[in-house]
Each structure stands twice: as C-alpha cells, then as structure tokens.
Image (cartoon, rainbow, N blue to C red; front, top):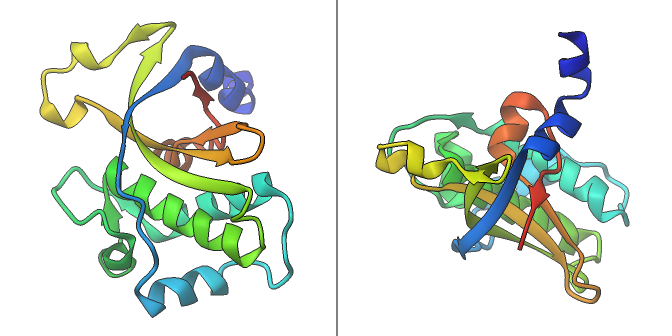
Length: 172
C-alpha cells in the first residue's frame, strides 16, 4: 500500500492518458480580488522555471476550490467568491492563474496554458462510453504549451486536488 502511495503519480501516468477533443474559454483576470489572491499566494521573487510556475498554479487552484457536481460558474473571476467548481471550473481557474503567473514572471511570450475538453483512457481504452451520465461524457484538464518549441505539459487540477498528482500523460 505504501508503494502505491509513494508511486501514485508514476502509476497514474502509466495507466491513464488524456486526449483533447476541444478547448474551453481561456479567461483573463477582471476581478482584482482574484489577482490579489494569486499574488498573495506566490513567491515575491520572479520564477523562471515554467514547471515551478505550473506547480504554484496547481497549489493555488487546490487551495481555492472545492469540488462539487452541482451546476456552477466556470469563470475564475466568479469562482474566487463561490469557491466551488467541477472539472470545467478547476481547469479554467488553473489556466487563468497559470497564465497570470507566466506573465508576472515574463514567460508569457514562451508559454501559454489552455483549458481542454478531454477524454480519459485507461490502458488505452476510452472510459467515457462506460458511464451513462452526461456528467461523465468528458473531463476537463489543461495543457501548457511552449510556443517556441512546441513542448506540451499537461495537468489535471481536479486530480491534483485529490491525489496530489501534478503532471499527467497527454497524447495528441
């Protein structure tokens, strides 16, 4: 059991892959409370490592949001007050937070975070057809792309909140 806990990230990345079937809206910060919250919860120094910025954005998202299956807003400018979201809101909040931090640290010219509509595959098998609820027809996650090199990093803020797994396996 201890080995499963210790190697949960590696195990998850080996068993589960994510594929994008579309993109969601990428929100800009219009709520000063959201900008202040992000600034308050980050290091005061500039960070030039995109992976560390991604981890900071995951942490901020996890601190702010609580999962719900109820219908709610997905706009991070509203989620800062409501504090509840499902995977769509988690992905939107993360990408907005990550893009804000990338800009703050002068990395927005190279990197951009985008929320994705996705599907999960367990050992190569799409799991979504096995659920009969419209709630499980897809699952949102985020990709963070280097605009110069094409490198893509993927994260699932919802899974991060519950299992503390940072990066996930993304297949184009």
